[in-house]
Length: 263
Ligand SMILES: Nc1ncnc2c1ncn2[C@@H]1O[C@H](COP(=O)(O)OP(=O)(O)OP(=O)(O)O)[C@@H](O)[C@H]1O
Ligand SMILES: [Mg+2]
Image (cartoon, rainbow, N blue to C red):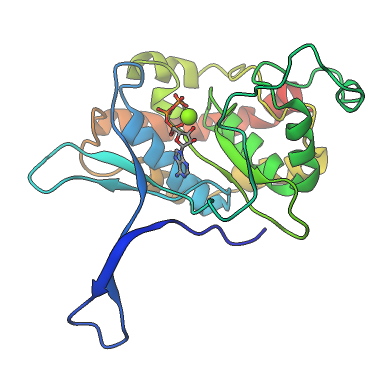
């Protein structure tokens, strides 16, 4: 896969202390906060991002962010510089005629996910990016992501390697339900999520390899991603440790969940 760059916005000025030409500049971001429908969104995005970085899952990088003088923490998902790429926007609604299922689409495996549209393009994506699509799908099942549909983009027509990236893990972990308690209950449900946009399209061997990669992830790395020594947005330390424990437990159930949902 080609390297994904983020978008530099506005002008940059020379950094006065730099001896190597560094500049002070700005990078675009989508700023997300805790919300009535996702009361632990900032924490969940942050943890999912750190886990994804460790595992090599292609999600956009995000960081905790705040305005000077404002104590409330946001999650800043750095904006991908996709304007010059021929990216197919799976985050947009599929405006094609739902009745016009073409011959190619009819040949797809039984049980592919059709509710978010883009069906033929999703199949093309899984064919062009078999490693990445399997990695994203297995990761989503581990973190109990309920909302991967419409939350990724990819170059489909590019010759050569191209880019694929997922975004928005704001409906996973402690925000897989609207409240933290309901989310913790849901993390303990090893039948959830019950579907995924890449279901029946992922390569079984690559999905199995990703299960192994997650299962062999050291506990210290999961602990470092899930706990912060302070509240993060609405999430207390107790709840952070509970998330860590839930992730460890979900590792044990991951193989069966992958078999059931993806293959
Ligand atoms: N890092 C990013 N780079 C490029 N585009 C982005 C990025 N983050 C978000 N977007 C765009 O902004 C839209 C909204 O962002 P996001 O999905 O994170 O918000 P949301 O509140 O969770 O929305 P929804 O609930 O509809 O999924 C995305 O669908 C995508 O089109
Ligand atoms: Mg979204």
